[in-house]
Image (cartoon, rainbow, N blue to C red; front, side):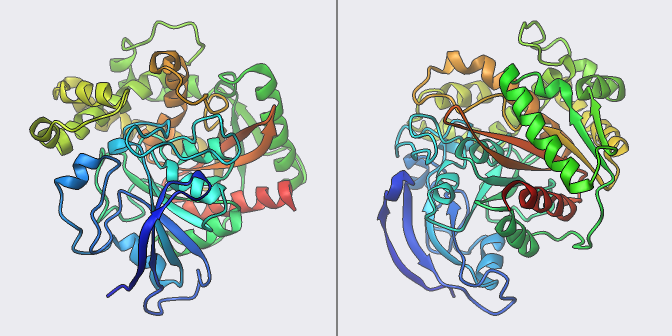
Length: 430
């Protein structure tokens, strides 16, 4: 039985968090001894109501009868949980603004959104309230806030970390991820949560998706690629393993089933590769359908109060029907995973921007962000659909705003990816 030492409301440093204290239990290992963490309000904690970012959800659901296995694993490894963090309502946004509970303050850019839906978890880490924090990532909910708050964030390979005791959003994409301020702690948590082989493998190929970096403005494009390539060159002693690829063209050539989605939202002047736009359309279609299957009945029965943007998104999901396009998705996923595996192998890395630019300003109109969101999801859908693992790495500050890059590796190569991230971190910061 876990011992809850205290429970109170906390808004320290704008990191909107319900404070509690779950002491370490058992003695599985001492890997995380002395470290503190917080959990997104989507994880079950015994005796607590899991709020899912919405007050009406909390009013209509009982307290959890057991704790999510992922949280238990951390407690059994010596870590102490000190809080439950605010999230976007029903995990249905990448902004991080919560109409009911307020918006956690971005610690590196207070006038900008923190990113969501794992907003409070990212801010708690960025503001140095905890050493690491748990979040979930369906369409980008760890990677985006990690980028916006200038910290590390991992979306592990789909299905590698248990999602038991976690409220589902869309199970074809749901993952449990985590945040840390440095690559060492990110890796420590991975040693506890990852079930994959911890054997070290050497980097053999580093691929820069040059078309994806063109989604950034020219200054950010040059600076981000420059920092990244320089660090890899220093790490490897040469640039022989660095390759430049148009990932959009590669995917279009090797994922023929995507043609089904090429006619969806393809007219644009924002230079998004058509295959990535189609990949994003496929992902969001299935995400809406699975959200409806999971929560449509509750929304229809309870008619919860939902904030701007969320309400429209939820209603759009409830109108989704299972058509033939959804049936194509398993083929898209299989073809994409085979294609990217062929490109990267077990020891290759794909580099892309985490997001297409700096965090948007607070309270920006939803319609104004549509172009930015389209670019963001075209990037986020690569790992989302393939199930590959991805880590967002902070690269510092440009024009007083955080910049980042993401590295992707093959499904199941999470430990390899964390090793590469740690090595690049050591080049960048040590």
